[in-house]
Length: 105
Image 1 (tube, rainbow, N blue to C red):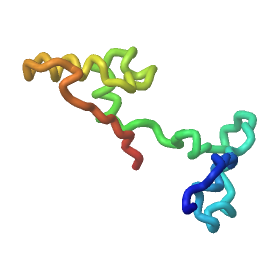
Image 2: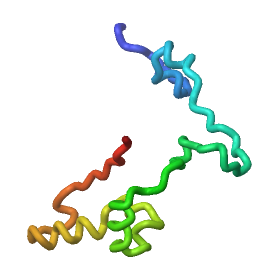
Image 3: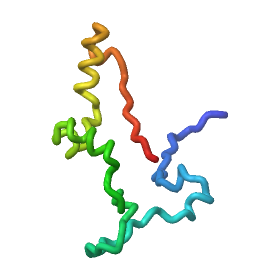
């Protein structure tokens, strides 16, 4: 009689804490600061503001870039890039993977 005679039921609701190390449960998450009214004497570095203008070299390069490339983030799927790579190598886009990583300085 080593086997169970009745089916047992398992009831347990998983939570995020089930997957975290106990010492990490104490860490507080990032709390964004409240929006400040605009002031000339405050530079919000966490909002990617910069107190300095672009260098003359950057300004020269930007003159030759279509404004549409500067107003939006790139396609996260890299569709146009994948199509061009596929065309150059004679393959179809599903034949390779593309991963786009942000560069943080």
